[in-house]
Image (cartoon, rainbow, N blue to C red; front, side):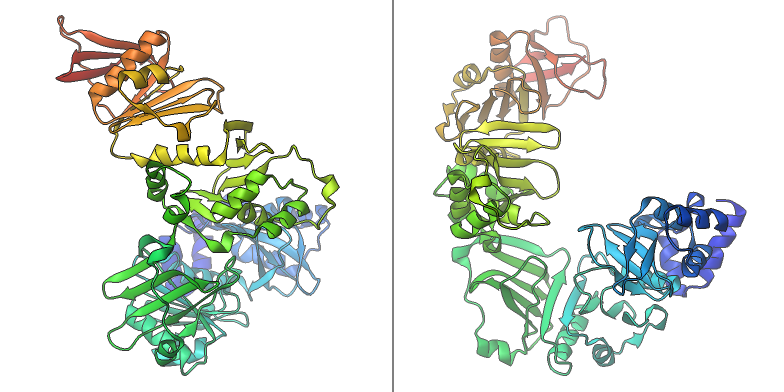
Amino acid sequence: MSTQVAEDLNTILEKLSEHARRTLTALGVQIEEAGRVDEPTLRDTLRKKGLPELDAAIQFHRDVGGLSVPALSLTFATARRVAHGPTRSTPDGEVAIPIGRSGGAAYFIDARGVLYRMRDAPRDKELTPVAADPWTLLEKISLLATVEPLAKGALCLRLRPYVGAALAGALGAEPAVEATDSFHRFFRRGSLVIVDGHPLRDEGERDTLVWTPTLEDAVAALRAAGSACGATGAELTTAGAELRIEPRRSAPEPPSPEVLREDGAVALLAGAGEEGTSGHVWAPPGPPRLEQTRLFAGTLLSWETVDDQGARTRDFTGAEDSLSPLLTPRAVRGLLRLGARVDPRRKGERASLERLLSCWELPAHEAALDFEARLGGLRFANVQWGPFGIVGAWPDRPAATEAASVDEGQLVPIGAEILGSVSYAVDAEGTVHLEDEHLEPTPIAVSWPVCLERLGAASADEGELPCSCRIKARVGLAVAAALNAAPVPEGTDQHASMWYRDGISVLEVAADPYNREPQTAVAARREGDLVIALQVALQVAPDAAVEVFGVKGDPSPPAPEEPVVARARVWGNTWDKAQRELCIYGGPERYRFVWR
């Protein structure tokens, strides 16, 4: 950083409170020279985009142009945003100039100098006023950076309507005038932070939020909000809560209305995507404790408790009861290990799903309707299942169309990664196809139960079968026979075959979806069984390449009398490109795996 840039940064920081200076410095605040341009260049950029040369935008660039906080993905670079960012209008129809962005959002300024925020998706989201000037915005961002994301053990209460001033009085918090303007009011007392309206979130714009590391403050805030302040809704958020997923049959009866009234319970504020959810938040008499229930259609979904032992959540959406009639116990065990749950809020009735598919001009394949009826709302690992929840979450839903326009040959999604590009879809015959960003739809199973059987089996023995290998050939039948593994008909079809016994798992895939080549995967508890699998595989397919995992390599040279029990080409990338061969030496007492 040049001397001039360092001086400019100090000039900016000197205009902020000590708390903001300390926080932003800890977060690596800097000035990006690439984000700073001279005033004539900025004016020229505005003219080229057909935008007015607003004095407020020019002054903003003079004040904080080029400021960047990498830890928050925050950058103020007016010229760059004007050249490459979107242009928008304020809610009053005035022109707004793009001046910066942070993670998931863009910032704008109008002729009065008011700053606005717009999240990245959906693109047509209205601009939300966020601060009266850049200094107040930086103060707000600094305060929020100290409480979000929640540290382990910290608590956040969301309350409706605005009750910030009353809560601050009850909790002894003082106004944080440096972060307060006509859009948001902040209050502080040590690590306790209260704000009317969340500046950086769409959810919470109409609510008061309370962040605190102490349970006593949270209990006092809730009691004050429910009694003295007249809050009509509340939601408790914790960090690092111990989660226990249980089947629905183990759910207790929710507290009676009489008990809730006696404990001063406040109705639950359902979050985005939780339409139809109800519940309560309350602080029972006695030692500091918070309770929160979440229900849907009268069914208890979860019960969270926070006390001096920490935060614990009992989740009653466990999928065991839904999966057991459809899959083998081993597959059910595997999916439960992945956290399989069935959320009734993500499930749709048959008629609702048919209407939704029609809106998107998708066929109502019976396999998709059957999946929704049995497992709609299923979720495990990073995948959401059920066509109603998946298609219903697509943006920009079109109007209903005539059924005649539907192409029956189209695939209907039944599973999709929440963060990622992998999805699963069924055709008219019920065959499951795998789709990915760079992969054409590829059939992987004759039905969705077979697909789920394989996915569950793959995780059922995690940690119990530490040795594994992949062989680039169809050798599953021979390997399974040598290891006395029995066929698993529930997971076998023309696309893949499964065999299993205690301590051994074999999966043969006719064609891997990504490289279209056959593959056999073997997992074993003992190294000796893995060696047998490799020996048999190489007898059937001598030129097959292999990958081996979960065994310790030994680079020492073999003794003259040490036998070679298996030798194979290495498949895939290795940490050393020169290692292209695997040799296994020794015998049942001790095997040595040598890559060279």
